Length: 224
Image (cartoon, rainbow, N blue to C red; front, side, top):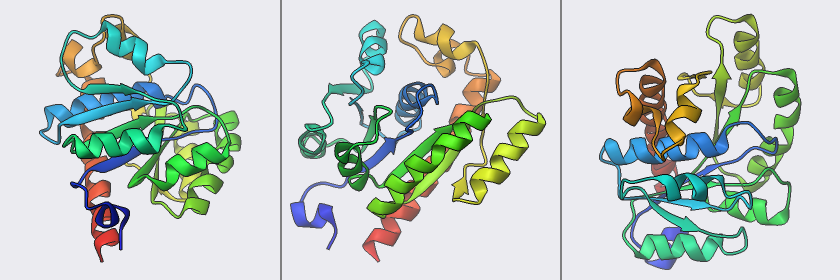
């Protein structure tokens, strides 16, 4: 019996972004995927920020739009906050986690329907990703890598995709390096709100479509 069935709670998907290396892009992708999910009709969406650095909170406080909803949380509080979101009728929870290897991170990963692991195409990032993989595999949760900050057609980008594929599924949509990401965050927006026709906006839309497909697949597997 699934955790949802045990709780008798409404259906809500949980997407956790995890990386044990700082600077991988968890916070940026968390807010972009949450906004894109709302835009695509997959809401209501709640963002949960368990990173003590508070990057999501600072962005959300600059934001003028009412969605997505934001919950602050500590790692220890996350299970309770997730259940509050589930009881509140949210369809998707997107969780940003700190770059730490702790028992609390493992507990959070166990609550995920899907773990998204952002990785920049650099030797340092690839060397560090093994620690995140170990946590997700120990929890027995499905995971997907996404290459973030990529330079298209660069040799190192292709090499990173090949290296990651040895350990799991790599999302076909890649997120390229672009000043649009920090620029859009200045006033609490995302790249699609800055320019919906830009390449970064299209990349985020493609990534959300891919992630939603993987979430649905994970839900079917859990129900089987």
